[in-house]
Image (cartoon, rainbow, N blue to C red; front, side):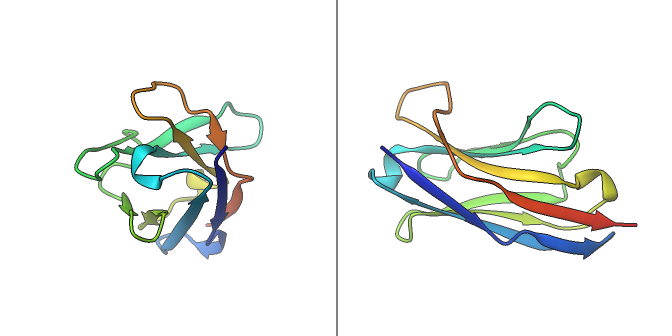
Length: 119
């Protein structure tokens, strides 16, 4: 079993920055593919960014490309989401997720952290 704990959310003005962190425990971190998702009120959960086991490959939703950066520190069992140039439409609960080596489905989820961007 894998436990994921997010932190770093909060209230920020449009144009500002936040960095989310997610610490994983319970399984060798390097064997986990990691991703960030978000869910705004009344909307479905959407993928924001993902990173491969080694960190060598990343991908992003079109809506955050050029503004958000996902990274991981395998020595610290942590994945990050650096969010710059935040917009009110980025307001959502952000979730960290993990998938097992070779799997395509994320099966482990954190509790979520609220990000609110004021205009």
